[in-house]
Image (cartoon, rainbow, N blue to C red):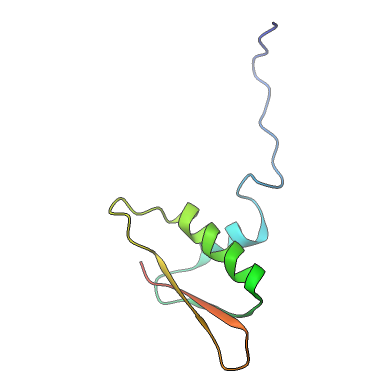
Length: 77
């Protein structure tokens, strides 16, 4: 095996540079994002869990289904 040194780690998908990770980083406590489909809600809540890890293990978000069937996610911690 050959060990390579000084090879930069590529950016792109699955590196925390995607749309949902960027949105999660920009959200402050009390902010919310709405008009999401179920897949977008899942992607955003996963990004929030990753970006805003909490030592106590408590959730940093809440999500609710709205009357029109879309979803809204709030950052709460």
